[in-house]
Image (cartoon, rainbow, N blue to C red; front, side, top):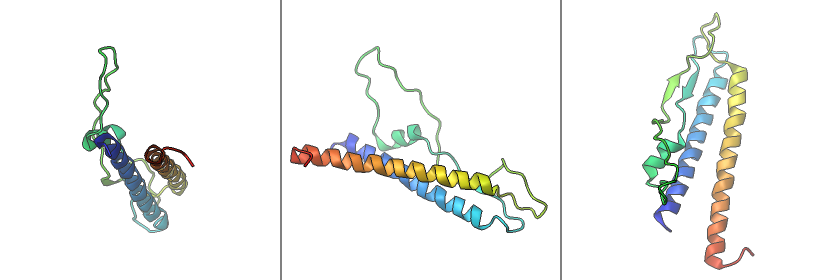
Length: 133
């Protein structure tokens, strides 16, 4: 398997791992929605551009007229307290409705990544076996 293919698999795996970690943080927030003094947590955003830099998989400029991608700022899966929520009189800052929307979005993101991963495996199998049957 070439390094670019393995790099793409690594990238998909990192995104799925990030989504899995995000679901855990969201679950913790929802579970503590009624806990006095609990502060809502969130993960810093995942950046495909940053993840691409770390996998060694990159775009190649083959023609001087190609568009060169702009460098993207870093991102990681660091957990931080959310600053965008209102605090209730009990000191709790969990926005339950917002958290449930994020759970749905993260679930769709994860399903999309697993679908792409399966499709890539299927294409590799076709290339190795020579047919789709």
